[in-house]
Length: 198
Image (tube, one colour):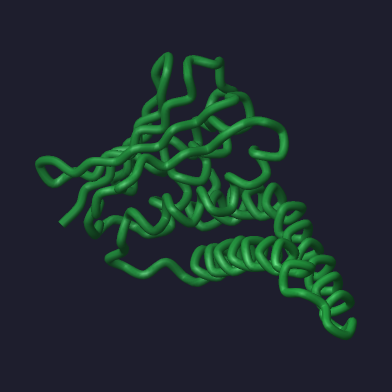
């Protein structure tokens, strides 16, 4: 049976593979738009309007690059223990969302996302549960909506996939998560992740 660390590394690799094209595309967009700005701004008496839309596009793309890079760095570092739950969901959404938009699909996090608290369980288990669930949901559904709540010492993340049939989640992984204290359950319309919090 694979360890939590091995399962997380495999999941993180899949998340990064899905995000790589979008990160590269956003970087390329920044480069192209800044080159247009440089080229047009170098002309004598060039009005600001000649470059403003390209500068705005570069700004938006750079914001996406920064967000995705920070998400990769945050998830790539060893998980702190105890760890906060909400940042894991936000980082995963930052990495997986842009690629869906290019194909007319969507990954939404319901805002404001509540503070889902800090969990004493393995940060690796939390990352694995959220990553595997979002990968499963976004591989098949055109619209995935994530929400969270905290009640009675439990942080719950609901990932609504609209009832589209999902590929079954790995039983070995589900067993490992349960042993770590994280419950991941699927139903007809959603995946629910329940994490003890303090």
